[in-house]
Length: 485
Ligand code: GLN
Image (cartoon, rainbow, N blue to C red):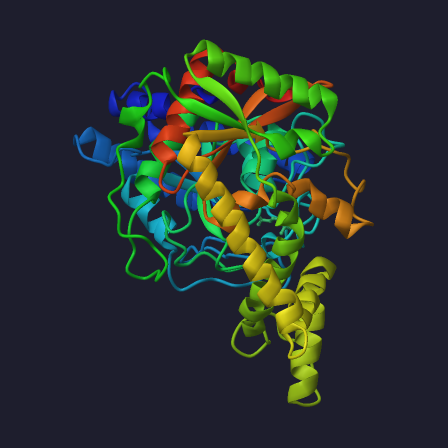
């Protein structure tokens, strides 16, 4: 069965001409169409475009040409700009926005031969942890459609979990790759800040946003990341460092690796069944030859408050461009310029986005800047320093990805703070710009639990290697929701 094959297996089968790209694209498009009423994972399905690209890929393969991902179907989170295909960012504000250019990530994956099947649903402007803030309706969790898939990359995660696609792009500002990966039982990697270009990726909080991958395994994530990563002169924060051949380094043994357990992550509100899954996963690493010790990050508890000052501050600035003139939805019959700005923004943005813009404007305003924004920046520096110190002693840090498994739709929408607390374990890596992953590590009350792995800057190779070795020993990552098996 095609959908049970991994991305790397599919790439090999295409190259060996055991399967055609058109065949793959048709198979996945049929799965997408069938799942859409239940899951709502896609905002746009680009069937015609995909079939044309698949035919071109098949011709390239027949001629012995083509990139490493030639003919492999993928999807993009709907905040990566795609020329000619609308990019909505999950918002009414950009409901009809068609970018005149491609994001670098999109260009690179196309150059590697990947075929885009569509644009994936997401929380509005990537603000959310449940995919309930999308203008295009919530995405549902394929393990149980009464539950959220996590957010903000909920469409990407649900699509990969239900194998509507072998893999998808996603972004992570405070946990939006790892948290939905955990909730949907798949593998996600947020690379080091600066590893993957942000050019053409619609900005939420520019000092935290990072593009990455949601896939069925660490091996597949390595395949995709190798093509996405690398210096881009169009992104001033992109880092000019060579990209390792991630798939080639996966098999290295873990003997002698030092793993630090994040003490605070086990102390604060972690569900006991979830904790059991994580502890059992850690025991597997011990059996593989790693040594475990406890590591404390005393200021990590400041992550959530720091993030909810810094991220809204940056978003209030980034989202100022959507004024109905330069970008975005424009209201009808404006009386004057003030009215045009006011009503276009009031109509175009949803409640969560407005809440963030207001918070951000407040913390940046004269008189509050020092008390909130500057203080948050100082605390952010402290958190980074604590991580740096920890990586003087250990090779990787591990802990749970989230405090609980996926929750019910509507369970947290009335109380933003409870929603924000979902990211209590993931935000630290964003504040410090560190690479971090989530991999499936078992089931708590029948739902997937995620093990989080955090590494020092540019240690993606080590993260993927650890995750891959674990996945060779376990089968959590190959289990599928019954309906999509
Ligand atoms: N859930 C967090 C938020 O709402 C993180 C989102 C993200 O990583 N894009 O801001």
